Image (cartoon, rainbow, N blue to C red; front, side, top):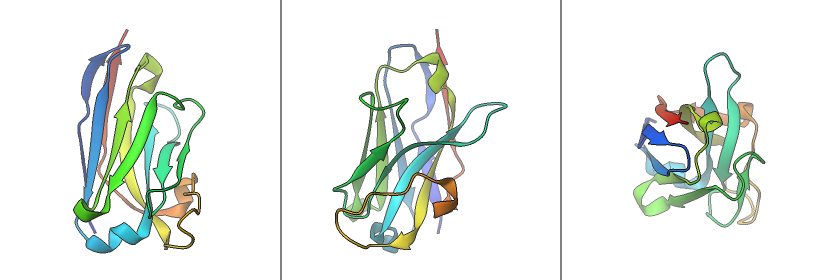
Length: 129
């Protein structure tokens, strides 16, 4: 499976960006999808995730209330709306597909990177202060 992320760019602090990720395979609709980010010199960190049904989401504390994850299973896609961006949000953002399929419609999506099997190439977000 291929994951194509897009939507990154340069934005001023306080601005917004919308990232999108499209999976090449329809079976991705049966799996949680997540966004992670990695800034220079730092470990990859969890940002947000959404379970296969789209009902349950999970956010890192640092982005709660500012970022919103959503998915469109008909389009094999997941999006991340990022508002009120801060300089510390600057990073390469990666989308990923979880390892375990389906489960309860309300099952919370995982936040650990090792619980995701397929990764996109990343899209760069730069936030100027």
